[in-house]
Image 1 (cartoon, rainbow, N blue to C red):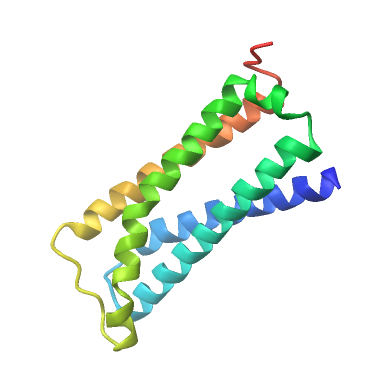
Image 2 (cartoon, one colour):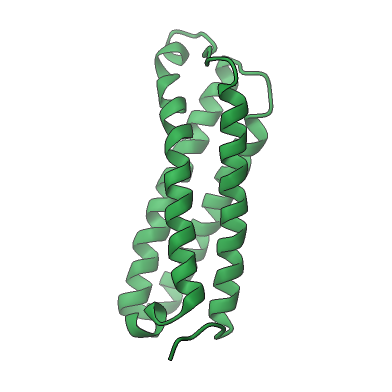
Length: 150
């Protein structure tokens, strides 16, 4: 079971990174109805995969791996949790914006965000990617036993 949950956790993480990368690439293009649909879908995949990462990760911590005491006594793991929370908080603004586009998309029109909004979204998504890269570094450090408080 442990291997299955490790596989599912990694699959969810790779999906999260891919969805975020898709958002990063798409948000640089001129906004059209088709592009807006793709951004909304990529953000949905991002959100679903983030939920899967969290649930599966917590199941691994408490039931399938080394135990909660090991993980919560590890600095890189605590940093991973903090970075995951940061990515979640950062993702709120783009998600709200993308969801606000649904009426225009349903009407077959390209959304018309306020001036500068797309540039802000680009910056936020870039920040999410940087935080995810740092999170992956923390995962490597944790897997190598670096930062154990015990």
